[in-house]
Amino acid sequence: MDMLTLSHVKKRFGEKEVLQDVSFSVPENTVFGFVGQNGAGKTTAMKLILGLLSCDEGRITVNGSAVRYGNTHTNRFIGYLPDVPEFYSYMTPAEYLAFCGEITGIPKPETKKRAAELLALVGLEQERRRIKGFSRGMKQRLGVAQALMNRPRLLICDEPTSALDPAGRKELLDILVAVKKETTVLFSTHILSDVEHICDELAFLHEGRIALKGTLEEVRKIRRTAAVELEMEHARDAGLLLRECPFLQRLGHNVLLLREPEHLPEVLGRIAEKRLSVLRVERMEPALEDLFMEVVGK
Ligand SMILES: Nc1ncnc2c1ncn2[C@@H]1O[C@H](COP(=O)(O)OP(=O)(O)OP(=O)(O)O)[C@@H](O)[C@H]1O
Image 1 (tube, protein in one colour):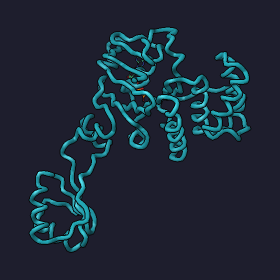
Image 2 (image 1 turned 90 degrees about the vertical axis):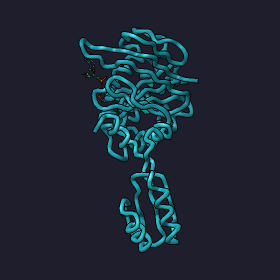
Image 3 (image 1 turned 45 degrees about the horizontal axis):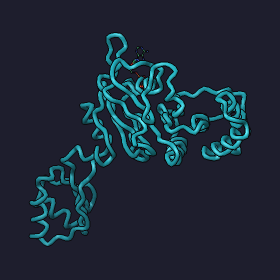
Image 4 (image 1 turned 60 degrees about the vertical axis):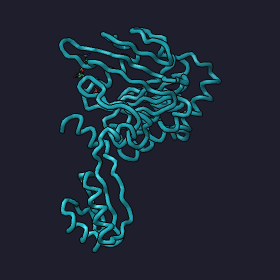
């Protein structure tokens, strides 16, 4: 089942059509990357999903129910982590989660149990300091714990890793992967390596529309003319083949790159004819970054 669906969503601010026609679905229990450059409209789309803005056209459903602008009942299925989460910095993490439990009406014993579970999940169970002494990474992790207090079906995180160092990013990404057993995760980002590491599916928002979407494999297949890498057993064979086929490119002492795969039969013919020894012939997957650069026309 799809946990979230956007169908033909449009949103303009004055003259500016930020979302021109946006449709995508997020399957249950997946980590879904919502990708786009700065200003592409990711936060706007998230606010529409949370009912904080109204769609000009189109329809959004969460857990099968339609989102309505204003106090939408679908928000009881959602946990939300904004890009810069705000806390009462004089509290400790345990006090803060207890406070969140209280204001959302979770019974006290349940709050205590859930807070302990979540602090362990985000690696803050031993932390007795006040939040004001926390690093950005610790704050983001606490933000995830807070967003999960209510056992949401869908966790939405707005650029959760963009201000973090590599270690902080990895910790947060690992948490998102751990969370997907219980909760579907939608996170926005412009960091493509994060998407490559943890996402099951992605949608790329560009110029108000979804320019690419699907699993990583599906998205990569879009670029059909992927290059081929040949690893020869001996460097001298690589040199010989390079002389026979000057359109090849040398990547390492025994590794060659064929940029135009239509020449592959000719290359394989030469290898057979000259009795060269090949260790590996592999079609290279285009990096996600190359695909995005292609889509944005750079
Ligand atoms: N309330 C508003 N009124 C007018 N324009 C707005 C409003 N909110 C957003 N915008 C404009 O809509 C566009 C998309 O903004 P949005 O914050 O959704 O992008 P984003 O993809 O989240 O970008 P970033 O990664 O920089 O946060 C921007 O040009 C922004 O200036």
